[in-house]
Length: 513
Image 1 (spheres, rainbow, N blue to C red):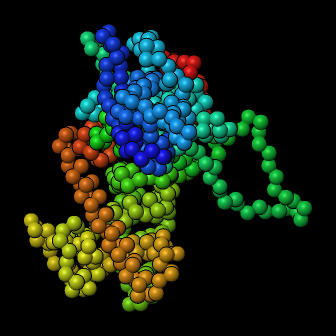
Image 2: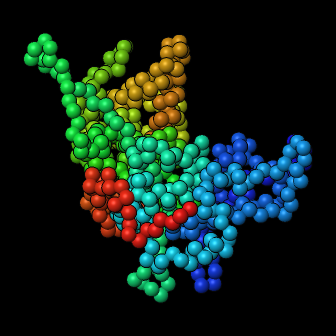
Image 3: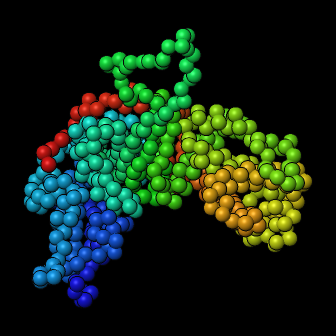
């Protein structure tokens, strides 16, 4: 390989994604941004060889996301017997539809042909208002040609913004199990208040897995009886119990930090809460940012539900001096019933409940983000020195024995789950080391809960100051101060989950690509 570093270019810096729109004066650029990752496309080192002054401009029409790729450079490496410049078009052809490689003039001509009354494909699920405008969410299936076309155009965003993310195989025989949600910013056209333009803001993909149900015991009337059943020829497989998994979830950079991710997640969650076949809504490999958003959204919603509010620490339980922690610190039957009703997976439900119960602890023992206590206080109280802190602005009341007892029960509840979750790793340690390691893990979790609760409280106050309220059927997610509420109506997923192509908007066009 050539030792001249001038021939190497960072692929993250070289790639520029642009959102454009046609105007009478030509194509106007609305927003530009770089990808976060390109390792799945250009290799682990995210470097491109063979060019100087390399620019890879991927233009998208902001509405239908029609792509156009333009590669430019000041100088290209002359091939030798051992090496040559990377064929960028060839590499990107695996991630972009053929239409992306048309001439710039053809791209601009096609933009002018898009009608003023274009609307996104799929079925309109809901609309809401935010500080920066109106938004609409559309839902569709890959079996809908217009939905499939839009998804095919934007799938390169997955490796761009999901570390290790891979696009959906649209040719998969089970592709009909995918449901796609598109988020669009709706803007009035200049001097035409009755007409609107749509700007793509993000999307999410969800996949349905069959959820195995424990069968009831078969009671044989005779020794030769065996259970048999047949499916009707018109039986709809979409009615079988399923676990619905959020697989990909992307808000593109121009629309980030506006609370739109939490809004989209909340809308999707409410949809599947009403979807009878779905028994659980799961998430595939979430990153830390998504985990925070999800935690805050679930906490905001569940914290307003009577069944969830009724889950409390049983302070009448006595704590043994030695041995295992008590089993029923929170009523397990009520816990299970609440979790199943709200279709949240066990670990996520436990974490949100632990956070909520922490927020309900007496103020004297409630963990915060202040300065650590000294070791003597920690030993006496059992509270984590990493999380518990004295506020300089407000003197905390002295904890009573009852307060300390409540805190210790909450701590045992959390530690019990953490031990089970980390059983394999902890089981390899000696007893003393195991306790020390579990204490460290607990301290980190406690600190994280305190951080999230403070963030939730801050966002809730900001939302109230802005006069935001949640409509019936959907809870407001106080994830960012810009998450404003507007009027919206949620469809029942059960009515349109299997619509296929019939659900497509009449104004969404499917073009040959």
